[in-house]
Picture 1 (cartoon, rainbow, N blue to C red):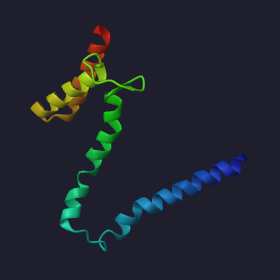
Picture 2: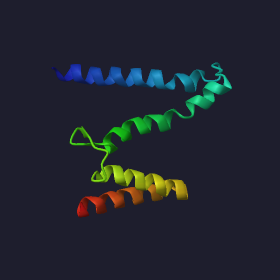
Picture 3: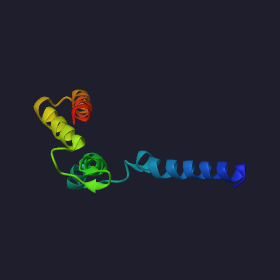
Picture 4: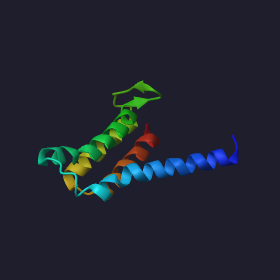
Length: 107
């Protein structure tokens, strides 16, 4: 591949990303979504994050591992309990990662 081909691909992908992402900013006032759809779309970021994180929590070396010897799963459960009790996001990250580190050291 030539250098021009790579730079052309980067520029075209950047332009296509900007056009597709900026559509709602430029024309958002003209698009009216029903209130129920707006409410449903508010759950999309949390659902996407769960879809990314959950498979990593329940697998060990590519195999489903729901046992108590899985430190990622235990740290995830501990982080969820911490968040449910405090509703503090940064504290949840610190608590979950600290618990994961301790579990990896002692398991």
